[in-house]
Length: 181
Image (cartoon, rainbow, N blue to C red; front, side, top):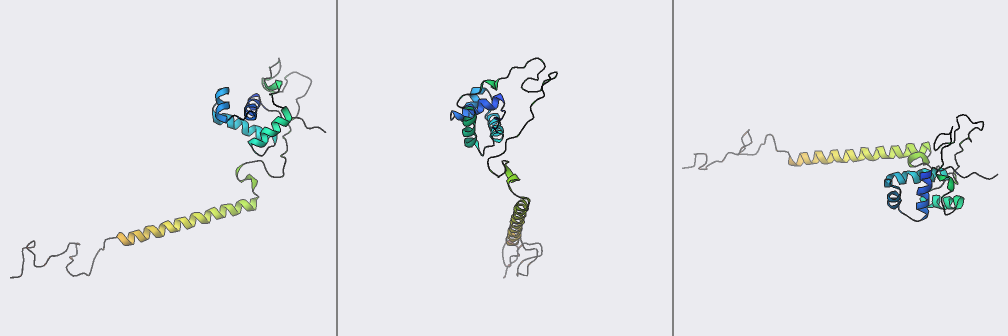
């Protein structure tokens, strides 16, 4: 049983062709009149459709399936009764082919982020992050309380010469008008 090649959009073919030519997303974007982020999105979609691990793997699979050049059907023309860019005929007797997502080459999930971890691993990651946040907050609290304790002015003191309002009383000075005579 031969596997049918994945159905890529015309833009995905153009981006993958640029990728085969070892061009950066920025260069491909300038040539196609798109933003580099849009080109990256088209390439990421093609990576998933090709069942590849990354851009380099996708380029190799694309070359193996389609060769060096972009296939001629990358710019389909809409015929009467057909939706442009689609394969659904409104009044035709031939039903559209069902979409079959390609299976990844390995047993690992192709998704990004936490999808690659099992639920138990996700729970462990979340618990670890929660503990790290709690420890960080505790350290910040200890540091703030310590700084307050160091720099806090005393409210009342038993030191001799200190009046209740916090000013020092100077005995025997000309500033107070008294003196020892």
